[in-house]
Image (cartoon, rainbow, N blue to C red):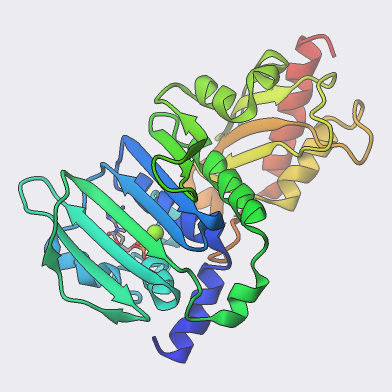
Length: 325
Ligand code: ADP
Ligand code: MG
């Protein structure tokens, strides 16, 4: 890999969890119904994502690993993106700083694989695979020792991976998703597993039965923006654990305007340092919101932030009042 490739890679892939996020998004974009993620040593030595999606044709395997070759950005199309991917940066970036193997099979064709080692691409060779795609990333950052040094303990990196998987899994309840820690070899240990189900079942898989039992269902609408999901009753506490899951048009986001609105909605109940537990999905016409900004973060910019804020504050207050709070 060239030096500039490796530097650019660092913007997309900061740590194992960011690689997992990109690979999981790709698997979801491929229309998979079952996705398995296996990691070893906090994702530092191994990340393997196996899906049963539509696969990649042999003719496109090498392209998928070439920088910007698959970019779906085209002028002002940014706002109309429906899938997670669009930059065509993730696989090439990971390939620049790790050993990557990509095997895939589309219906009606044979299975093929390509490997990239230190940024150098192999030619596709036949392999054995029933269908879908397997992306195997070994020795992340072996090519960039400086970054390797900044990684935290295996335990902390695994924790970050688990959070990324759970967050994304909330936006795809109809996809079965499993995360395993295979550090010790063999089948490994299940860290997280969710079967296909409805949004409520998925939310319970991620946030727990206790949250489900202490949350109210949210269904609100204001001028073309809808808000659905679940919000904890003010009497419910998760202690120090922050459990705020916010999605805009299916994409997990972290955003000051939205978290500020949440605090506003619960202002009468919570002390300033507590965070209400919620899992909320905002949906609006794509032209009302810009979800992109930076590869590693997911920020949103509403054309009318006051509208989103108003919906959250009034929608939640109303629902809490109806529930007797
Ligand atoms: P992006 O997702 O932004 O398009 P990526 O580098 O993440 O860029 O992936 C490059 C391309 O490789 C994708 O556009 C997609 O066509 C293909 N691809 C990657 N992962 C998968 C997968 N699991 N299943 C099917 N196609 C995939
Ligand atoms: Mg992608």
